[in-house]
Image 1 (cartoon, rainbow, N blue to C red):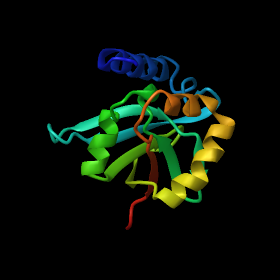
Image 2: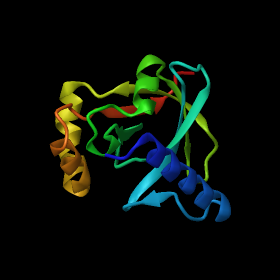
Image 3: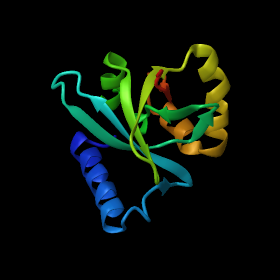
Image 4: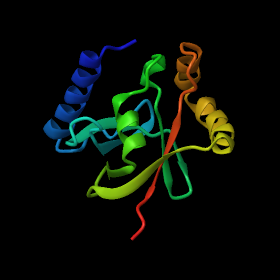
Length: 144
């Protein structure tokens, strides 16, 4: 499984690509849209941003997968949003916008997981590497 250092390095390289290209490259990975998710650190209280792929939209919700490459531990960003679901999301060509994160219900996961794994088999492979059920997170527009 990737180390925290490797994950942070990949994020830094990804941000560098976006910056160097003026935002023209890096908004799609493995044929999936990429977003920047900003959470509030559960320990630090500071904003923490991570680049994530988004394999699916479900109505107004953007779906992200807390896979961490099939690691036995949840990614830090997932733990952060679980403790504080108020997040910000930036998509290609758009300003950051406030959103609310929530873990998919068992019924939603049962409906969404097959759609995701049908198009992106790497997620199904990640699930075989761990005993934890990989959570799906729905990022929904924040109430005004």
